[in-house]
Length: 141
Image (cartoon, rainbow, N blue to C red; front, side, top):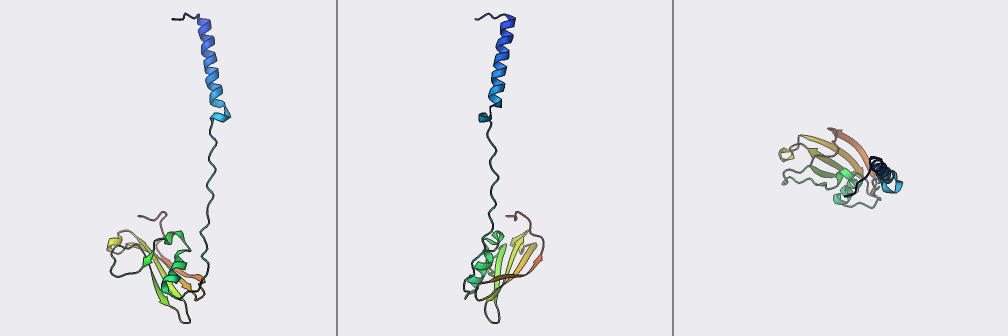
């Protein structure tokens, strides 16, 4: 066993603490913060000729990431929380009514929000109205 004088122990301890402090303050030892993620804009759908309700709905669904997974309204499906319905417009194109519901959708959804869009025969999409409960973010699963 080594026998150090009190003065030697103090010097050794001071040197050890200095080394630890210098290592901790070394900029290379401190990770730099990650850059903030770059927000990605929602892609704008490219207008394309529309000849079916499915084509019109696909253009509407592409306008908002919340609409992903929306299916056609089907009376035989119980518990759906996102659906669309299409009505042909006089002169061509479709009116698409898109609904997102939440809160006990097995019983028909307690809350819901509805967007109504016109999609003309060239594929131009225009929001006509928006009604219903405020949509929570994120949507309940």
